[in-house]
Amino acid sequence: MNAEQDPSTVPLLSERIRMALADEITAGLIAPGTQLDEQQLGTRFGASRTPVREALRQLSASGLVEMRPRRGAVVAAMTAERIFEMFELSAEIEALCVRLAAWRMTPLERNRLRRIHEESADAVARGDIDEYDRLNWRFHDSIYEGTHNAFIVEQAKALRERMAAFRRAQLREDGRPALSREEHGALLEAIMRGDGEEAAKQMRAHMFNASGALERFASFVNSDHR
Amino acid sequence: MNAEQDPSTVPLLSERIRMALADEITAGLIAPGTQLDEQQLGTRFGASRTPVREALRQLSASGLVEMRPRRGAVVAAMTAERIFEMFELSAEIEALCVRLAAWRMTPLERNRLRRIHEESADAVARGDIDEYDRLNWRFHDSIYEGTHNAFIVEQAKALRERMAAFRRAQLREDGRPALSREEHGALLEAIMRGDGEEAAKQMRAHMFNASGALERFASFVNSDHR
DNA sequence: TCCGGCCATCGTGTATGCAAGATTCGCGTA
DNA sequence: TACGCGAATCTTGCATACACGATGGCCGGA
Image (cartoon, rainbow over all chains, first blue to last red; front, side):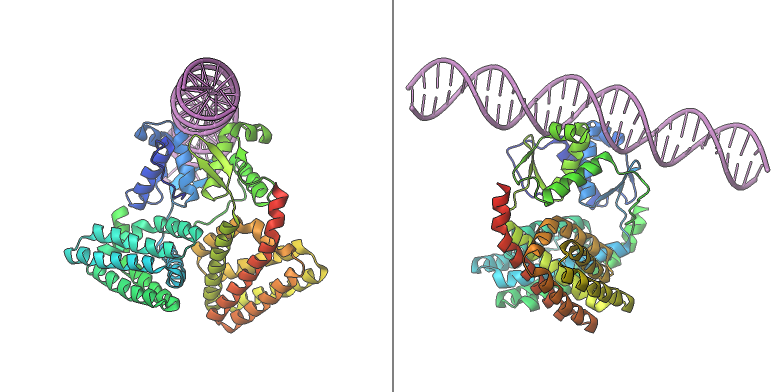
C-alpha cells in the first residue's frame, strides 16, 4: 500500500510475512478459500502468532484475504465474475489515468514512455515474457506518474498490485505479448498527440483484450487449483 | 460475492476502536501529525495495546494514519494539495460510476434514484444539512449500485469513506446544498436519458464545484485545528 | 557558547499465556 | 440407520511480559 521503500530500516518481521504471503497468494500458490492458520504460518515463518496476525490484518485490508470474526482468515475467493469486475475497474482506472496523462505529461515524460515502448520490441521478439512483463509495468507506471497526481498513482498501483497475478497470466497466451505491444503503440500515438479521449478509448480496448486473453486461461487455472 | 456483512456477530474490540478513531480523525477532532500512543489509546478505550495496534494497522491501510517502523503512528498529514488530489480521483471515480450506471441501471433503480432526489428538496428547503448529507450519500450510493459491479461499489464506497469529512464540510458553505441539489438534477436527467458521457461530465462538474466550496473552507479548518 | 557523543527513558515489536466462541466428532435416541 | 445434542478440541481475540531500537537530555570538550 504505502509505496515507501526505506532501505535504511530492517524490514519488520510482520512486513516480511505480509510480503511473502501476498506473493504466494497473487502468484496463485495458495488456492482461494484456503484456511490460513495463524499458528501454522507462525511456525512456517519461524515467528510467533503476533506478527502473523498483523500480516493477515494488512492483507485483509488490501483484499487478498478475508477475515471473519472468530472464524479466522481465508484466501479471498476469486470467482470468474469477481475477476471480471476487478478487470473492469482496472480498465476504467487505467483509462482515466491515460486520459489525464495525455493532457499533462511533460515532453520529457513522453520521451521516456516512448523509450520504454521501443525497448519492449526486443523482449517480444525474443519471446521473453518476464522481461516484457517488467517493461509493461514500467509503461503503465509512467502513465500513472503522467497524471501528476500522487494520490492517483498510489491507488492505481495498489489496484494493479491486487491484479498482478491475473495481468501476468494473460501474457502467457500465445501471441498475446505481440498484440499487447501493438496496442501500446496505438496508445502511445494518442498520448503523443495529446488526445486524452482517444487514449482512454485505446486503453479500455487494451484492457478488454487482456481480460479476454485471461478468460481463456481461467478454466485451466481453476482446474489447476482444485 | 461473499460481500456478506454479518450483523449477528458482536463487533470486535479492535473494530470498535478502529471505527472510533476513524470517526475522530475524519471529523477533524485529532489534528494531523498527532502521535497516536498505543498505551494511551489502550487505557482510553479500556483495552490493551493489542487491539489498538490492530486498529492502527487497519487505519494505516486505509490511509488515515501513517506508520513508520519503530516510530509509531501519527495522524496522516492532509495538505491542501493532497486533498485536491483525492478530490480529483473521487471526481473521476464518481464520473466513471455514473457513466456505467446511466447505461446499466434498471427502470426500478432509476425510479429509486429519482425518488431520493425528490425527497432531498424538502431537506434543502428546511436547510437541514445533516438530512441532505444523508440523502446525498444515498443518491451517490444508488449510482454506485447502478454500475452492477460489486467490486466498483466496494472501492467507490471505500474512497468516499476516506473523503467523508471533506465532502461533508463543503456542504456547510452558504447556499451550497441548493446548488448541489441542482447539479444532482442535471445529473439525474442525463442518467434518465441513458446518456453516460453527459452524466459523467455533469458529475465531474458537480465534484469540481464541491471541491471549490471546500477550498473556501480550507483556511478556516486549518486555523481551527491549531 | 556551541557542538558532539553518551546514557536514560520511552515506545514499539515480538513472544507467550489465557479465555471465549466455533467446529467437529461421538454418542444416544427415535 | 439417520438425526440431534453435547462435550472435547481447536483457533482466534485479548492481555501481559520482555527486549530492542529510537528519542531526547545531559555532560564534556573545543
